[in-house]
Length: 515
Picture (cartoon, rainbow, N blue to C red):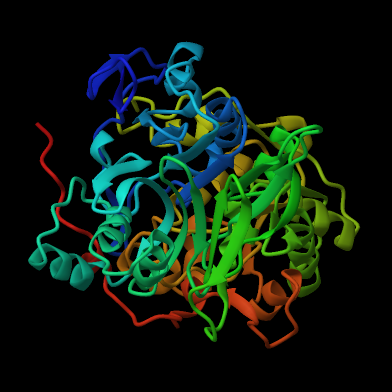
C-alpha cells in the first residue's frame, strides 16, 4: 500500500490515505562483507536527486504535469506530488511511490486548475517519508505557496536556526521549506521581491518551481548546479501554455517546444499577462553538475544547452582513444553505459553487442534471499548472453564505479558466461568525493576510488584491466576545451568544491517523528 496526502483538495479534508501499489516488498536486511577493511555494502547507482515541472495556462494542467513527471521518473522513484491552482484554490496531492501508482484518473480529477507544479523525488536531505514529499504547501504571510525543489542547500543549518529564532515553524525536515519560510519572513514589499531576496540568502544547488493561487515562478541558483528549461505549447486561438521541466525530454511528451534554459541566478514569473524575468544574482561562475551528462539525464534531453546523447557518445570515443586494448566485442552495462559503448565501439572498430540483457520489469524493491546467494540482486536485473560472450575478449563499458561491489558481480557474471578476458572501462574519472549539491553520494570512506588505487580496484572487481576516462577527456566530451572546466562542477572527481566545503553531517537535519 502507498500513502497519499491530500491538502486543500475541494470537498476533502486535509488527510492521508492508503492506496494500492505494486512494489514487490521491502528491502531485506543489510549484510556487509569487507575486503581489506573496505565495506562491501549494496552498490546501487547514484540516485538522481529530483525532477520538477511547472505548467501555466492549460485547462488540464494536472494531467500535463503527470505526463511530464512520467518522463522525469528516472530522476526519483521514492515519492511524487502535484499541486494545482485555479486562481482561488491551491490543492496538493502527494504520495510515496511511482508517479503512475499515485496519480490514477480518479486522483487527477481532484486537481482542477490551469496551473500546476510537480515533483518526483529521491531524498537527499530530510528523512524519506510522506512528510517530506513535494510539492510542499505552506500558508504564509505572503499567501499560500507551493514549492518543488531539485538540489541541496549547503548553508541550511545556519539559515534554519535564524528563522526559528524569528518564530518560524517548520512542517518538514526538508531543506526546500527553508526557501518558503525565508519568503514568508521577508520584509520586501512584493512577493517577487521577497522571492528574489530569499533566494539570495541560500547557498548551494536549487532549481525550483513555485506556485501561488494565480502565478508560477521558476528559478535556478546562481551557479546553475541543476538543470531547468522553459518550453512553450502553442495553442491556436488562445494564449500559449508555458512549461518548465528539469529535462527537455518532458517537453517531447507534452508536444512543447523548447525555448531556453532558465539562466543561473534568474527568477522567472508567469502570469496571465505573460512571462517576466529578473536576475536576482549575477557575476558568479557557472558550475553545472557534469554528472548530469555522465549519468543522471536521459540521453534524449538537452542539458545546459548540449544534447546528452552527443556528450556520452564523445565520452565513449575519448575512452577508446585513451585506453583501448585488443578485444573481440564491446558490451555496455545497461542502460546507462549504452551510448558511451556505441561511441567506443565505433572509435575502436570493434563490434558492439548487447551481451548483458536487463530485466526492465523488476520492482523498485525486492526481498533478497539468504546471504549466501550473494549475486541475486544483480542476476535479477541483468543476465549474460552466453553465445555472445563465450571465448571472447570482452570490454565492458559502464558510467561509474561507486563502491565497486556491483562492478565485481558483473565482471564475475561475464566471466562465468565463458568470457576469456574481461576489461572494464568507465566513461568518467574516478569518483573520490561526495556531492553536497543534491546527489545521494556515499561518504568518502565508502567510495572505493577514494581509498584504493586503480590497480587495487581492478584486483577487487577481478577484471583483467580497468581504466577510467580522464578529466580532460570528460571536459572535451561535454563541450569544454582541454584543461578548462568552463561551466561545470567536477567536485566528485577532484574534491574541489565551488562553494564552501560542508561536511554531510552538517547538512542533514534530524529525522522527524511521524505520528
